[in-house]
Length: 251
Ligand code: CIR
Image 1 (tube, rainbow, N blue to C red):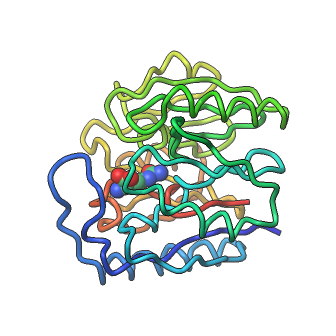
Image 2 (image 1 turned 30 degrees about the horizontal axis):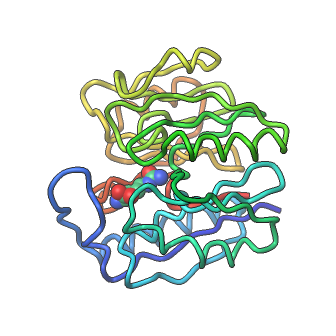
């Protein structure tokens, strides 16, 4: 059985963190888009577990950043943005079926910086994830039989803002955003230059790949690989620097 842990969009979502300026967000539309995302996950066969929203944490819908499943263990992160650190405990409670390992200060790590591919964890060293966080992830990974490859993230929020797996071998990459040399084991497909930073993807267990509707030219490159893509409009999630991976923890 596969589960998707999600968290609803809070009313204060228009105060979400963004890298530049302040987001102009229609919270009601964000909620409808999130409902559609949930529906797609259900359709693909996931059992949905919902953590209620937290009105003191505008970014709480981005549940991926708070927990990483590594083998049989759930690593509860210490998010890089201090404003987000209070998001973790309700997620930890929802994951209490797993042995939990908590990241300790001063280490920081966001789940958006961790990409799992087979028995390798690619971890972004970013403005949110520091060497301490990478070290604590490495300890859990090594216990669980995973290798770790560190990828420097230069020009985007998280590793998975710019490196999106679409199947076990292939990632869609935003040119110039990360240290691509570390991705040598993947087949790389580049995001279309006409729509930079508007592509996100989430491969689902039924074999479809959920893709952002805002990047049709990049999505066409994924179709050309032979994948069945399902576009979804998440404009209001993107307005808060989010994508498709960040709204769920899948296990
Ligand atoms: C933040 O800045 O933390 C949120 N506004 C966006 C987080 C997106 N998370 C992700 O891509 N994993």
